[in-house]
Image (cartoon, rainbow, N blue to C red; front, side, top):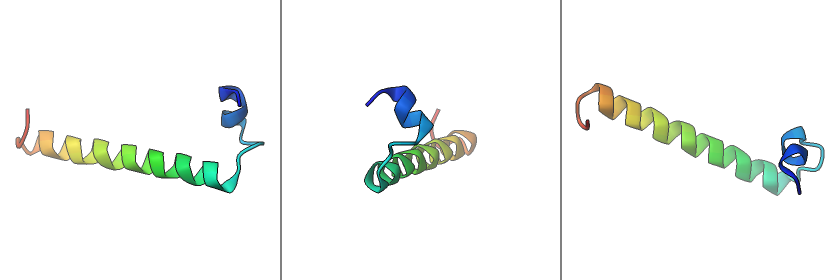
Length: 44
């Protein structure tokens, strides 16, 4: 499946949609936690 087809969303199954959603959710959470730790001076 091409990336363009995936981004279009016409051929997504429920499992693929759930995987993409969980991936984005994980990415957002990791970015948020990292930003919080950096701004609080814990790391960096």
